Length: 285
Length: 342
Image 1 (tube, one colour):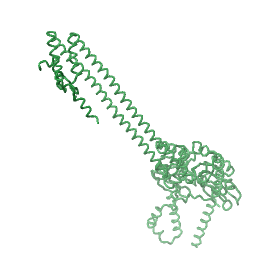
Image 2 (cartoon, one colour):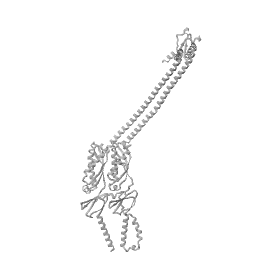
Image 3 (cartoon, rainbow over the protein chains, first blue to last red):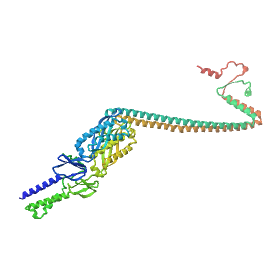
Image 4 (cartoon, rainbow over the protein chains, first blue to last red):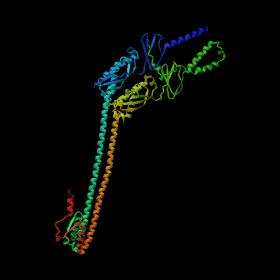
């Protein structure tokens, strides 16, 4: 008796809980859902909270409501100037219309595959009309916008919204790196040579300037020296003149004596003297 | 078929749902059980036994709504999945699962993402002048808006990383390599931080980028020697200019010294000349005074003195013309000259 009651009680509780869990379901802020009745679309739920459905008859299909991402594999793309590039993009998108999404793409895995190929072809068609130089400039973001627009147009009826398509990498393929390294090397060589040459130039300039200043300084000093010497000479001439003009007669004689003394200097001269003549030897006879 | 999100399974995700009610109340129940009046204990009344069991379960369930929010967290309370309130630090209560649940993101913690530390694919970037630079950097971020952070973006760390890499490459592709290697670093950090923040704001990621810092910015391994050569050339340039400067600094004082010497020499010459003139003048005046007294005597005296001084040091040949020994003259000067000839 008691056992039967217990079993009955448990069974009723169980059925009750089963029904409750079949009727109620929750939608979190990161989810959205569509309700199907035997496969036929009924309604879309995008508000988070507690919701109800008819148990067993209606089914809930959940979709993510957040921004989702696709990292596409690197693609080889040729630009207008015949540069081959390895381009790697990532895309953010959101499921905005779960029903359309469900119909067109079914689930995320398929959406991923489909979107990747759309992005790949958009990239090819936009970058095919772009030159490499544009990608290495501030117009790069403009290119990204174009790609995004192109992708947006292609996915317009898929129930998704493209938040962002961005080029992560746009590099030359690895086999081209050596070429770049060569260019980098020659550029560095040029810069190094240039630096050294400029150094030489500057150094020569400084030295030449120093030499010039030196010459000028010395020349100025010599000029001043000549002036000073000249002043000295004129002053001494003045002194001599002042003295000599007091007795011109004696000056003649005196000056001659001085001149003999200097002109007939004792060195390197041999005198042949006649003792019989002249005042000098007169006491030697 | 349902698309169950994997979010509830991911480890480290803020959606931590306590898998079992807190053990506290259950443990207490044993004491509680022992202290019951004997009428309950005899096992003769299974109905009350069940009732007690149900009451205990219910009590435990209600108590499981208590939760603690640490100072570095915020509690985001969801009722049937819908946000109802945000709580701050302390003891809090929410209606027990499955009615309400709480998420506790750590809002003060700074997280760090490293980019370019692993593969060369990630660290080699093209610069605006078509050079390649080997670069690594870190991005620090924290949660700014917990609700946006939790509910808007799946796989947020990966999103930040991809966005950061994209923004960095975008920025580097517009910069000259020499700027990236040297003085442009802080500008690059600032621009990347700003643009990354703008991008994440567009995504409504609820994330704040607190810092972007470049760790390594080098030329690639293959050309590093050439870059070092440029550095050497730079120091060579400095050295050679310094040498020239040193020469300049040495030559000019020397020249000025030489100039002073020349001028001093001239002054000396001038003074000496004047002094000499004055001396000579004085002497002349004195002799002139003597001369006036007796000109003849004075003349004689002076001419003798002059001859004396001339003949004194010189070589002399004294010849008497009347003695007839004239013709042969071995004059010393002439002899010297012929001997010198080879």
